[in-house]
Amino acid sequence: MLPFEHKTVLVTGATGFLAKIFLEKILRIQPNVKKLYLLLRAANPTSATRRFHDEVVGKEVFRVLKDKWGVNFQPFISEKVTVVVGDVSCEGLGIDDFHLKEEILKETDMVLNFAAITKFDQRYDVALGTNTFGALNVLDFSKKCAKVKLLVHVSTAYVYGEEPGLLMEKPLRMRRARNNNSIAEVLNCENELLQNRLQELHSKKLPHKEIASAMQNLGLERAKYYGWPNTYTFTKAMAEMVLLDSKGNLPLVILRPTMVISTLKDPFPGWLEGARTLDGVLVSYAKGRLKCLVYKPDVILDLIPADMVVNATIGIMAMALANHQLELIYHLGSSSKNPIRLPEVHKMGQAFFSKDPWRDRHEKPVKVGKITTFNSMASFYIYMAIRFQLPLKAMGLLSKSCCRKWEADHADLHRKLKSGMRLIKLYKPFLFFEGM
Image 1 (spheres, rainbow, N blue to C red):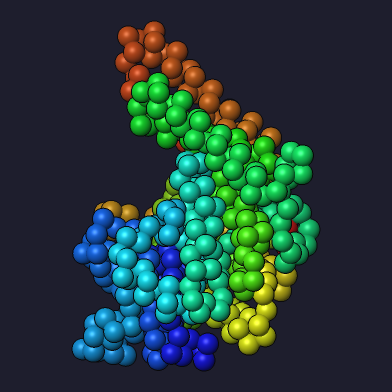
Image 2 (cartoon, rainbow, N blue to C red; image 1 turned 90 degrees about the vertical axis):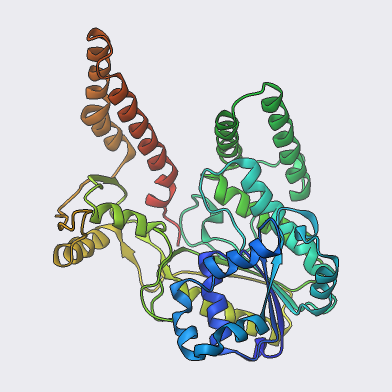
């Protein structure tokens, strides 16, 4: 942990899952770290401090560190951590406190950008603002830091989109860029298109919900136009490209983790925040809600425990600093050495939840069993049409002939079906992902 001894680190996205594990690890293993500046979105310093205590150190992942320091935990945290009100989507990281900003620019040795919007179909303006322009703002700020030695940007292995085969740790290239435009020119064009669309929507005085939906659809449209399956991977891919294009002489490490799951060992096994990727599927199965699933049986799932991502991050940072390397790209995954497929996950899940079942709100055990599986989208669509869409259509016709008796139920079921189909389409690239 020598790279962090007596060093000052600026961390963005500090309330995120990975960032919390990173912070806990540094504070527990390297208490001689000089200072951790944590950038948090908040209305004011008081709100930021409250967020930090509620959403970061108040979480169970800090349990081991609290036990280690006992009554001295809060004084230790106060000494080592400074909470900063800011926002990566703003120039200068949105830091309004002039004196604090000058202090950060003067003292920072390393910058870690964990900030990201991970929702696959987030509004285009929000995703572009945080994932792409946010990364560029972090880079610009890092360049102004007087003694910064390294910028670490946490990306995702899925920036390759749906490319099959062995995916190399190399810079990406923009697909379908017109007239060989640079990434900066593409980004400017996308931002102009986005702003024009927003202005058009606001001029029509549409409800917020309709504007949000239009922005979601625009993100997916632009992603697919350039060859990416969703807004998340597209905006993260553009972030990588613009960072590499604009970094100059600033040493840069780009980390591409695959599907991040709960901790394997550190600070204790099994810590997870929220139902993430595969975890969400397992929770749905445990609750008895997952009746069918579509995937290719031979597709390998690439899972990586969160603490292994953090350990790799620290190790790579140490190597980059020791070797004075200006550019490093690392994939963090398991598929090449420890592959697992969905049928295996299903089998293990069934065995586990049969032995230790989920309890419903009445504390009754939920019985799990086999689920209906499909190995192609075509077979899945046929099943959905016969099993749900046709009965739903019949219900709608029957409701009309009976004075709209079941209109509310029909509308609710139609909404749920539409939402479910949308989720399947969003997850399709990952369920059929053939990269390694």
